[in-house]
Length: 274
Ligand SMILES: [Mg+2]
Picture 1 (cartoon, protein in one colour):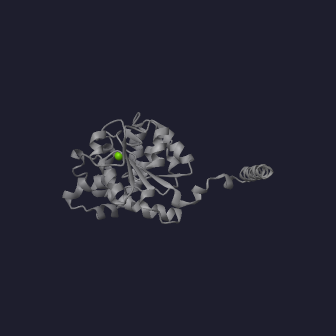
Picture 2 (cartoon, rainbow, N blue to C red; picture 1 turned 45 degrees about the vertical axis):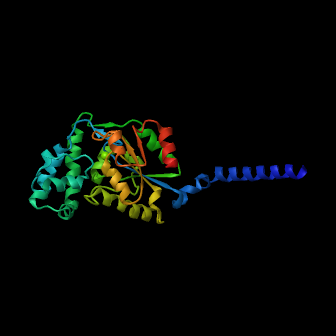
Picture 3 (cartoon, protein in one colour; picture 1 turned 90 degrees about the horizontal axis):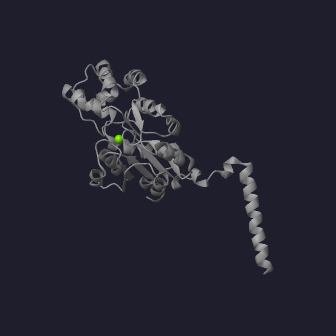
């Protein structure tokens, strides 16, 4: 009996000591998972149709067309192109392939392209009233996951880096991704290559080789599912895009399909258990 009591007291003493240490040292209060990359889940977010969408269908063509004419000398078939799920570089390529452009040639002009693109897009967005709308629950789930030491948020987007930043800054969401190992559309025209690049880039960022199943892609199109499957990641499809219903997405066999990100607790539960 006496021994039991002693043991309880000893545990309490240990608890108090650990609490004091945590209070005194903010690093000690940080979950150890944050410093163990092998225990992290990497959340790779698509942007268009997942976090937000344009209020006007095809509005991006207003700035894509003059940029393409300036950089590539032509906008090619841009006006007629259906672009859902395409990377920005793929849009350039699909528009211009009949004029002899290859993905490599298009990406070869990247350094010249990005500042021109940023200026043209900023101009158009700056004079457009309400160019984008936020999807339900996005701010809440990004806030919740960014505060949770089990998760690391990053972008896996077909958007050029400059476009992603402009869109997310519009909603003050860039802060969740700034300085993170994001994967952008200028890496490849092929979204599946973007997925593979994510493993390399994020493993390097964390200083440890991660397992494919530590990655969860969250996106709204079959192309996102293909990108996730290309490197063995888990996939959560969100039916908030303009092109694909829940039933259509189910045909491509993601791990989970949800209507939207509106129920933060539900999404957190899925992310934690998938
Ligand atoms: Mg999308």
